[in-house]
Length: 116
Length: 115
Image (cartoon, rainbow over all chains, first blue to last red; front, side, top):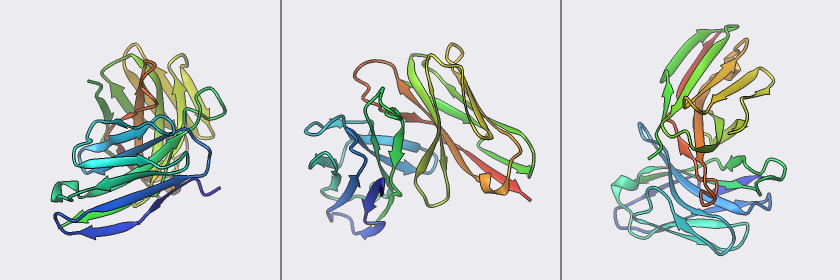
């Protein structure tokens, strides 16, 4: 199992450009999450998807959109990138509570985004 | 709003020492608490998960305790090794059926174990 994979690993954008960060998991997990990590701010939840077909806002959703394409894939889109969105983005997934390690969240390796 | 604080922000110890990392949270209505490890430039790896009804969890040289009423958790690392050097984060999941596993993270403790 690859676990949680993210592409790209690193990206440089100019202000106003758009891009989509891809995330996929092969653990048959229901819930998926997007976080951003900034120095001094810790990890903050951007959006999450409790199950296929549903998405909800987290703590810092402004400037982002998400798509839960199917059970495996959860993408994050920046429509018009801003320097404030320079960050490291992590995708995570979680299984079914009460089953195996269902409460544990598994993280991808991250996407480092620089917006100039 | 739940706030999670980790003390100290950084810790440097010689190899072989036993050490304690601290995590505190402001709202005791939690479902569980997790400890993660993050190596530089990498993602997070789950170390231990403690349900709100539990007092502690152990995995190898790691022991995590939870005192929900006082809003505190500790991660104890026995006989530290240079390979333990990393950032350690704690995260809490709020209680309530609509939390969907959403986590609130502390800012982490950067641990350096020198030979």
